[in-house]
Amino acid sequence: MGLKNPYLFAILIQIIQVGMTLFTKAAFNGGMKSYIFIFYRQMTGTIFLVLLTAMFERRSTTPLTLLVFFKISALAFLGITLAMNLYGIALLYTSASLVSVTANCLPVTTFFFAVLLRKEKLNVKKITGVAKLGGIAICVGGVATLAFFMGPILNPPFALHNAQHEPQHQHHVSTFGSTKWIVGCFLSFFSVSSWGLWFVLQAGVLKIYPSKLHFTSLQCLSGAVQSFFVAIAVERDLSEWKLAWNVRLLAILYCGIVVTGVAHYLQSWVIAMKGPVFLAMTTPLNSILTTIGSMFLLGESINVGSIVGEIMLVVGLYSVLWGQTREQNLANESSLPVQAEKKCTNVENQEPKNAETCYLAK
Image 1 (cartoon, rainbow, N blue to C red):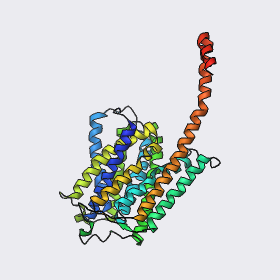
Image 2: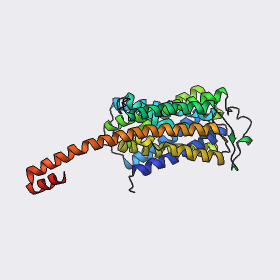
Image 3: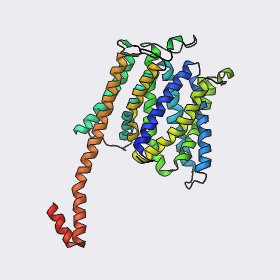
Image 4: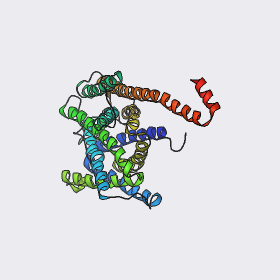
């Protein structure tokens, strides 16, 4: 595999996202407010990316117009400020494994917005179109299952950290079936929907502003400024803004440098090379690894309802992907005879012997 292999980078992005979910949940369990955490991680990521930009892309050949900057700021609000704050609340109200499982809806929401914005096609008169539409419906049903169906609880055989021994101030951690749990499930889905629209719109902006490092830096900077205003409006107690050498600081550094800095840059590169739907295809790996990590590292239990919901989300995901892949294969097959005919026509005009060979090959 080459150094610019989109498959390798897409898998690496999902592994980084697993660490983000586990570190973020650990910081929230330690009492950190989600709005403050998001601001700190965005500011850390911005500083890291500005340093990288100064070292590697100091002289950018792509001009930054006011319109492009406005589009990048709007993307930052959609994919960072809005999505991350919804994600943070959902993580507070539910669990790391459930939020990660809901992320399996990302390819479906990405495809939905791609169809809505006419970047993808959906023909319900064909089996491929029915598969795509059915996959979207199954994913929505999977989210509802996660929210309303529990079933037996499966506890891990051992855990490096027991969630039951958290400090008493962890009253925000809700139980299954409560109002907060249900709200958290749907907030998680809305967060994923916001990310799906973000992926689709990024592809268009990257075509007019292909400098990926500058693009990512400007997004992070805009997201940091927006997140600051959100955080200061919600939390004005200065004691909540203090940092110490604990899991909170570790989570901020990891999410700011590795996730916001590295993963977002790789994400823009993969989207530019293979498109937004391709990147979204790798999300099931995220949920599997996060579920395992949350059980054995955070001591979270998992119920049968979560497993059923996850299976529904994966089935819905691959139903959409099957329909899309099948359509692409049919389109490629239909274009092959035309290409072969054009090639043989060119050969007939230039080399008679090769033309005879091409005719016999038919």
